[in-house]
Image (cartoon, rainbow, N blue to C red):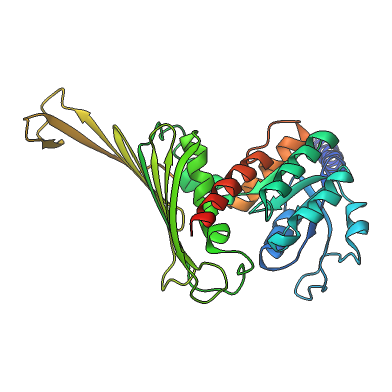
Length: 338
């Protein structure tokens, strides 16, 4: 009996080892270009991924803080992997992505996609020509405070976004619109699903050569209006967005991972414990509060998993190069008004 149990355990160990070898062989070989603050986060998470096998990274300077393999040239890294994560400063996104795509490598490009509209359009055309997958790092799409909403946001009429951050020299190669506001621009474009009709904006250069504070108002073809406020010289951090629609108010705190849904419905049955308001016409409305369950997650890991699924299953990209272009296009219109 004991011998049979022992043999069974040995068999199970062999099966598990075979499965691990199979999984390892089918993992996507990945490399990172740019090992700064964000690049290091990608490196660590890719190293822990169940879908990617981290091969190494390229940066002008070898990062002594990590133990990952450093490649001496971009070309050597590109030739060693299936997918490249581009985490350099924005002005270098286009030239690096172009080389990767023309080498038939899938690309993950940190936001914003490129410096110019023309560059983004060219990358999209190249991705179609070489049949590769391209994703843009608009990470808030994977924030559990947003994903927990499911289909709760329907035809919003007014949206208010506040994204404030304490000063950090990192990211100052672009304006606050491309550094911070573009996160909210992507979220709004994702839920509004309408073309911008009119844009007005104002901004101030305080420390940088480009705007550090900006406020913008965007009117869409479907009637929705969105207000954006972004600052990178704030005394406190804030990442809040509020959605107002005909039957609900939805608040999302991307920073604190808190979400609140307030729905208003007609009073059908008298309930002494219900929260009821009455307007000047005598109409009674009942208020319902809901705080959806927010699961703990790492949004960057989630976008990695989404990218991997698109590659392995030939599935649609969650945040496509076209999405990156749309966000950049609206951001450029805002910048042109400042």
